[in-house]
Structure formats: structure tokens, C-alpha cells
Image 1: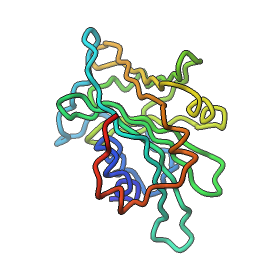
Image 2: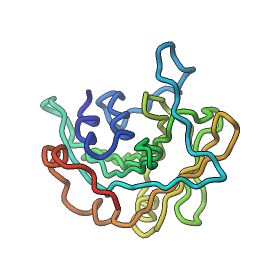
Image 3: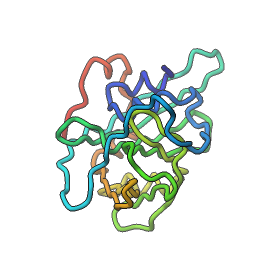
Length: 204
């Protein structure tokens, strides 16, 4: 498992799924293809008409360097949300490497989404942003957004990040993550990865 997966294992199963991605945290991935033989059956996202009760982890920031001598330190600030059954249905993580001007906001939705329409992110009532899925792993499908200083500023002062998609049944999906405490986690010191792995993410 990559360093990304190890660091975020205690944050959420959804973000852990992204650990299957290459260790270069900011590398762009090829578009996802059809479900391969042997892939677990997709977990169905919440359907419109009955809003599921979602329990959220805390915003947590962790930083880690790879084993290479010249590896950059990469920091991840993320949280997730799960429904009552324990299935993770939404996750967001801000990824940045020391010395790299490019930052990513990575969002994850459960399997069972329609890939072609991609995703849309809206902070509060602001302008929507769109991005395609870049990869699907056993616990969800991932989309990456360029995290400009303007976007990060909106996340610091905003109330909610809303992630929208379309299910395979052509039904709209809208899932939210509260932004409260994001600024504190993002600007504060990182949590020690070893300490993080020893404790469960506290629901809010």
C-alpha cells in the first residue's frame, strides 16, 4: 500500500481506497474503464427521496515523506461521511506537496455512479466546478479538482462542500461535507501518522 493509504487509513475507508493509486500523490490518473472481472459489486449510492443520515469524521491533517532520499513531504487534509450501515459515501481530501505550486482537491463517491457525466462540486451557493472521474477503486470513484488559493480560501470560510453526480440509474446524487474546522486543521500542525492510526476518527 502507498504512503497515502497508510497515512489516511484511520481517517476513512473511502480515502483508504485511494491508497491503491501510485505513490506520486499529485499524479493524474487515466480515466476509469469498465468494471473488470472479479471487481466487487458496486455499493449503491444514496438515492434521492430519502436523505440518509450521515456521520462525519473530523477534519484531519497528516503529512508524510516517501522512502526515497529526495522525496517531498506530502500533506493531506481530509474527512469523510458514512451512512448508518457504516458504508462510506463521501470523502474529500486536499493534497499538497512541499515546493509544488499545484494542489488537488480529491473527492470520492461510492461505486454505482455513472462515469460519463463526471462530478460537480459547489461550495455553499457558489459557482459549480466540474471534473471527470480519474479512477475507480474497490471503495469508490475518484475525481480531482485543481485547488487554487481561491478555492482553498472558500473552503476555509465556507460552510459546506456539496458533491454532485449521477447514478447508474440516471438519478441525481448530492452529498455534502461540512467545512467547519477545515481551516483549523489545514492551518494547524499535522497529526502524527502513528498516533492517527491508533485512534478512530471521532464522529461530529
